[in-house]
Length: 200
Ligand SMILES: [Zn+2]
Image (cartoon, rainbow, N blue to C red; front, top):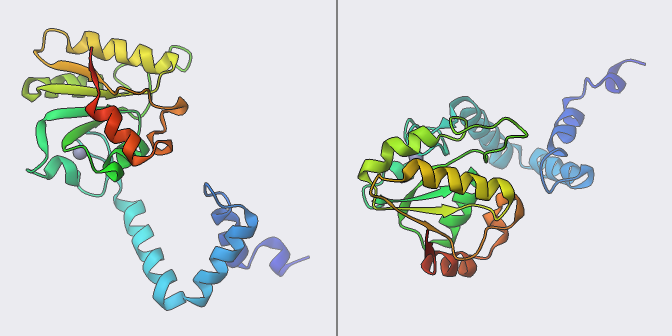
């Protein structure tokens, strides 16, 4: 038993890796790979090139913590974004959902997780000191965190950390769904939750 059985055909390896992607099972991975193989020059080669570049260059924005391929992300570098307004989100997917809704013109702080005594996640792990360091230039910090125990614990710790900094703290009117996936909310709901946010 040599050859294909031992995985010398990298196409099978590619299919197996693609099948691990969210929303893709073995059948759709096979379909996607077949499409790529048929469009090798037009789709597969440019995709492989950009993917290798992003894999090599992706890192956390030194200001907000989102994933970027530069030193500072496009949002933090954009002078048209309100630098006095920061929205705190659990992860990059939540930031992307807010951006997709197209209603928010401030900047972000991406936690990369929530405080959890169980998983030994502390304030430093979610960049609380980095947020406090930005506080001097801020008018308002909007919390867009899930209505879970971890979400509420995190909100409480952020509230204490920012107390006395002269920053207004608010929260989205509607709680973010379990797991912090703002992505599950439609754009109109995100907009309504933002404009009806409550001051804490
Ligand atoms: Zn940034």
